[in-house]
View 1: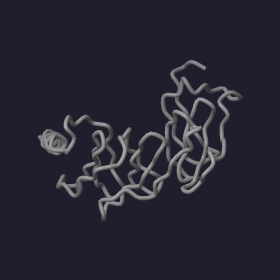
View 2: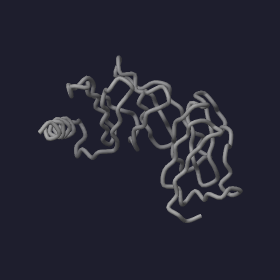
View 3: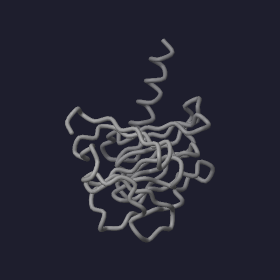
Length: 168
């Protein structure tokens, strides 16, 4: 019964978003239990009791949400990551990956502000870096091929867990 009420609360908030046709892009929970739901270019922030706190209109299309190693929610766009400041309802700490990166998937873990994976390799990068960051894994010279990665967990630059689809 409680699960049904929670589902109805989330559906109600989600359908009230400013997007013309809301489509779930991401959902994340921060270190304090606040819930973040994104659709197209809008992020809705809910208190742990499902009360709406903020509705944030972002500058870019949202590809997803992720939680960084400090427990803050990051808005992921095309080659960008921004931290949501829950108190102000604003996005801060914009990090933009260089255009030369091409397509990339962004991850978080200890050691760098963010990590990203491309067809070439896995890189570590800090906010404000203008270069592509440091290559940590060169897929070409490893036993893992980027096209077969299903998920990744980065505990540190030296300790990376990768799940593949079984193909190498």
